[in-house]
Image (cartoon, rainbow, N blue to C red; front, side, top):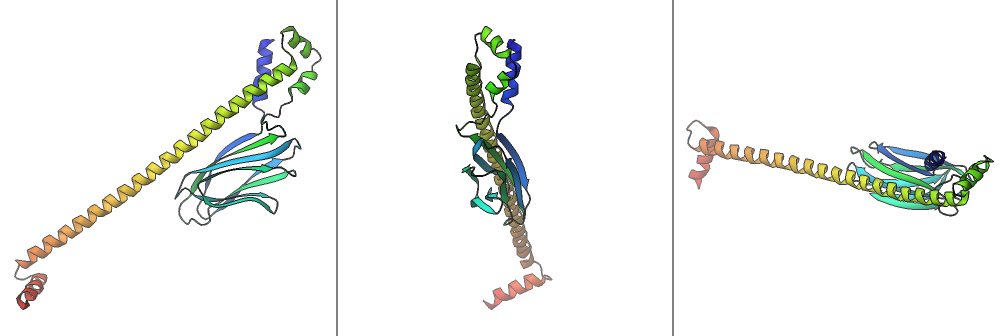
Length: 231
């Protein structure tokens, strides 16, 4: 019986209003992702996003419901918004990279659907328990009621949500920091090579001009010596 309750809990923990994605927005593109909200129990949507790779780590962001613009931000590296669900429909979360001609952007974002109590878990334990006439009695024989089980499972699920959220944020920060370090390394390597080539080119020109001063048949040497004689 305890195994059955554990299985019941694990199934319940997989049903929630929480989604996370990592997407790539090509340069010059405008991409939208849809989240359908058809259940009237959902009263608010929260979206958190962060650009973790590409260019200057910035992007334009919009939340749309049909033709209505609910949120709009320009040239942001990250953001967090909580939106009241006033009507059901397909909510669009759009990332605009049209201003960038070369750099693609990698964006990590999460969507949370909350009920009126601010909970993510939408599993009705009590209703599921009533489907089995003997389940309530068997749970009471174990010293557990449906209400206590629901409260404990909800508390565990909320703690899991917090852990998962913080882990996702840490992964996004780590990926972003790694991308910044790689970009800085590429810049330092490029400018170091360029400076080395310039120094070698200038040194070669100097050696060539000095040698020309001591060569009778060198036109450059003749020109330089001519200028020296005029002085």
